[in-house]
Structure formats: C-alpha cells, structure tokens
Length: 300
Image (cartoon, rainbow, N blue to C red; front, side):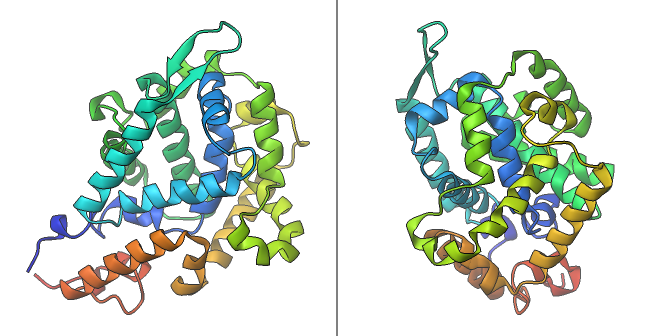
C-alpha cells in the first residue's frame, strides 16, 4: 500500500487540510486579493499581465486550483503545477509607471507579498469564522505553507512560519503599501465582479454577491480598510457574525454541490484524490472533509 506522502502533498491530519477544506476559504481568497492589491508593483504585475480586470472571479478559481493541487493533489500534480506557475512568472515583466523601471514578476519580494497576503487571509478568516484552531495550530499551518511557497519559487526559510513572524512581516511591509488607481479598481471589481461565461447561469443571483464582497472587505485588517476607505465602518462583532453565518451555510453544502464552483480540472483532481485515498484504506464516504475525522483514517 502506498504511503500517504505518495498520495497527497499534505496529509489529512495536517493543519492545512483543516483550513483548506473549510468553505470560509472563498472569503479568505477574495480578502487575499484585496490585500495583495495594496502592493503597487504586485498589483501592476497582475494588471499588466492578466485579464483580472475582466474576470476577477476567474483568477480566484485559478488560485483555488493551485491551492488545491499543492494540498490535495499527488506529489506529481503539485510539482507539475509548480513548474507551470514558475515558468509563466519567469517570462513576465511589470513596468513601474512611476519610475519607468521594468521588474521581473518572479521577484522574490513580490512572490513573498502575494503568498503572505493569501495564506494569512485563509487563516484569519477561518479562525474568525469559527474554525477551532489554537495558536499552535495556526503556527503549524503557516509552517506547512512554507512548502506551498516553494512551488512558486520561494525559499521556505525566507517565508514566515508562525503567527509572530507573519505579524512582523506585515509590520515591515506596510510602509511600502498604498492605494493605486489599479488597487481601487480591484476592490470595485471584487465588490461587483463579472461572472465567467461558464457561471453566467448564476447571474440572477448576482445581487447577492455584494454582501459577500462586502464581507470580504470588512474582514480585512483595520489598517487596510482605513487605506481603502471604500465602505463605511461597521461594528466588528457584526462582521464576525457574518463570517460565522457564511461559514456555517457553506459548510452545510454537500461536497459535490460545493465543488461545482471549481474549474473542471480542479474537480477532476479532487476526484482523483478521493479515489487514491479510498484505495489506501481511508473512508471517503463523507468526502475529503470527512477525513479530518481521525475515525475515517486507516487503523495502523
């Protein structure tokens, strides 16, 4: 029988599984994009090299595919998407309109900012939404995410591996952040996005998206909301209640229903993960989320 490290990148008993299987990830993903946009050069790199302004939700789904593959995919799948992402980034450049200088998109500083904004958002939203993680669990999650950072070309030792290190990183980074024209436009797009063609059947429910986008915005750190100043402030307790309600509602959805939001390739990858784990003796009758219960894992 294959060992778990030959089946998935992160094992079911990891802190990463607990966070990444939680449906609050959708809020965390959009929050991460809003936070990432505050770095002028990182935001311009996205703006100048993608269709983000036309399809921000598509970028979120592609990010979900990457995160899924380096969490639930096989080591081969994770290595392949890592090579693909590094190859794309290696070929791209971003021009700073303030100085005219051209920079590599795979500059370690930019990659580190994107990584930290992303994983800190997943963690903060999940914890505030009610996922029972201790401080030790949270540190473990960030330590595990150093492995994910390696897939995009970062050296794990250069990446924050604890909550204290992450807090120190943001404190150091904040003086270089500002709201550019592109960042302001990004928040507007994320509050009222254009749905990709394959999800246009959901257009009738689009008015419901604004409360979701607002929830993502209000989950940002206070200093980031103060920089943007897009929406009036609301009581923090109201935001926490909204996150808990959202998490409870989405976590109640059956896995096959929830997974329809992913790209077809992501759904195929997740199906392969369930099949491999099932063949290895895991009880996958309740899907991947069920495997966070130790009783559904093989007995040693």
